[in-house]
Amino acid sequence: MITGLRPIPPSVELKAPQTAPLLAVDRLKAYYKTQLFGVDREVRAVDDVSLKINRNEIYGLAGESSSGKSSLIKTIAGAIRPPFRVIEGSVRFNFKDGERDIYKLSPQELSAIRWSHLSYIMQGSMSVLNPVRRIKHAFADFALPHVRVKGGDFTRLVERHLKRVHLDPAVLQAYPHELSGGMRQRVTIALATVCSPEFIIADEPTTALDVIVQKGVLSMVREIQQELGSSVLFVTHDMAVHANLTDRLGIMYAGRLVEEGRTRDVFKKPLHPYTAHLISSLPRIGDEAPKKGLEGSPPSLADPPSGCRFHPRCPLAIDICHREAPQMVEILPGHRAACHVAQADPTRVEAVA
Ligand SMILES: Nc1ncnc2c1ncn2[C@@H]1O[C@H](COP(=O)(O)OP(=O)(O)OP(=O)(O)O)[C@@H](O)[C@H]1O
Image (cartoon, rainbow, N blue to C red; front, side, top):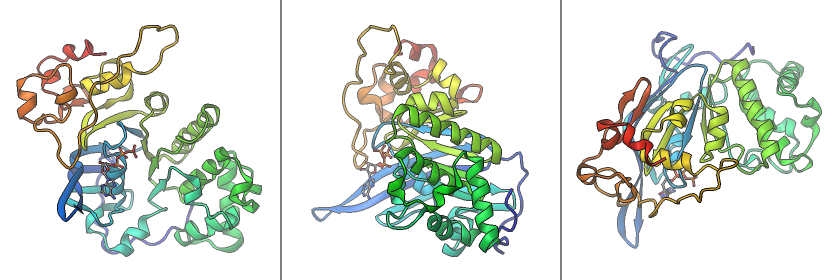
């Protein structure tokens, strides 16, 4: 455990009970407001999303390309830059030393919680690691400002952490190009976790890696999460990764969360036809039946369909789906879905899978 973290900023709110979720996202809307050929355009990348992430869990976020996963994690991390804007809603963290409402923090307060409370593992390790500087400088640049220890104590702290994640401290002397892709990604995970953050966002950290290396990196994520007792928001479109790693799973479609539940429940009994499709398209050994692709393409988020955004592609769509956007409703214990058909009769969705 690292001691010597920075003092709590004065604007921190009162502590909430430790049983409360670590993260509560409430009715969040965040849009890209751009102009195309002089015409205003609004891309509704995050459109009325509510979710909670508990302490000590790995929450997976899945969905096809352009469904809004990266935009949602940007809003959660408070990394909002024009043309992206938060329209309404809130993102609140219940950290051990007090609550933080991300959109009420000043830039200084936001940077004070980065790395020490909230950290981010990005997709490409090379975007974090400077190719012309040794790895040790990355630790000094990012982590050193967030711990009180300096000099030799800081080096010892980093070396201890590297050993904890099964990395040889010799990597500190290496340049990024001297390491394999898997090693570099391990280094970025070590970097993101060295200050023992309570909440870790991982954005497709294993996408560029081959399956064997990917397996090693995923076990490292699980191990470090358990050791630190952190919560992880793990984003990938790869459902096989979710099946192996995550405790709970949220599925996004066209800027909305359409299903959420314990990962095993979602895989066993999907409640949204889109999720059923994602699961049924996973390859299974011995299953020679041809896989049916999902017809149609994802909608434009600048002009999404009326009602349920999935209805133009949904084999179960009924009248109401064209007119009314379904709300996320708990259909089975701890298992929510935004689907009119499943809310009327959850067994109908099984037929899609
Ligand atoms: N800077 C931007 N300006 C305008 N629109 C954007 C911008 N960045 C993303 N978008 C749009 O927001 C929508 C959601 O994109 P986002 O990157 O969040 O999806 P994603 O699910 O993370 O996709 P991927 O898996 O491909 O990364 C898309 O329609 C995308 O075109």
